[in-house]
Length: 96
Image (spheres, rainbow, N blue to C red):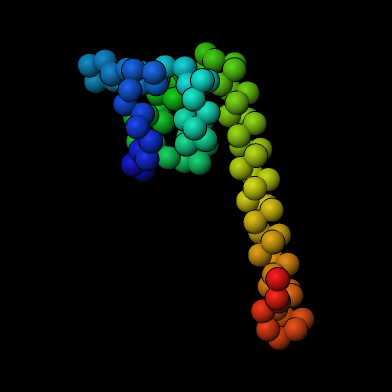
């Protein structure tokens, strides 16, 4: 999957011959969000996963972001279901 953030700066990714090395992104929460959401090139994702092996802080941030994104998806699903139930009960779209 293509990267949608500017990850190729010196604060997050260092390139060595034939390898991408991920530098600690803990000061850039959007990087954690980005990877938990499934974005990033294959090389970027691999480098990030390697970084998680050695960085307890980033692992905890990833765990927290995964829980947040799961709760968000669940809330969106519940809202959509409630809206659909309201439409079915009245036969038309509910008014706000």
